[in-house]
Length: 140
Image 1 (cartoon, rainbow, N blue to C red):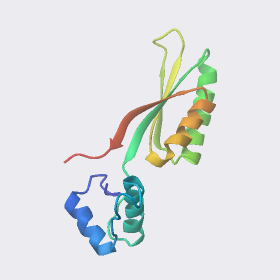
Image 2: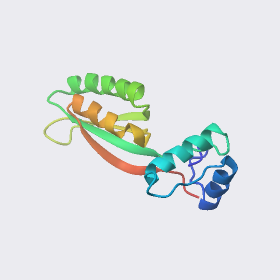
Image 3: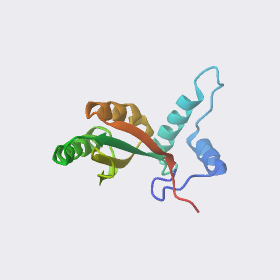
């Protein structure tokens, strides 16, 4: 996606940028397609051909706890760790007491390459990681 507008590029725009950057796609037997894609994005960024980046994922960590005070301190520490270790952006915390146990939902955006790290962080806080949207882009 375009890193400034968060809108996806067309196939034609990507193709032209790849030609300009002299990026050659190898046969599938040489490298996995995903690796080639990641390499292509890296080359396009380095050569300043396109302002491109991988689309962010919207994730949510749900933490249930016995006391709301404990949950609030946990969620603050969790948000700090997500921002520091997983480059999470636009973190927001939503509390809910609709169930018998209080629940804290931390919603945020991050790069897909950070998914495993985020999963480990959520486990460290006894949370449950949920994917809200795999690809976050602007329409239109």
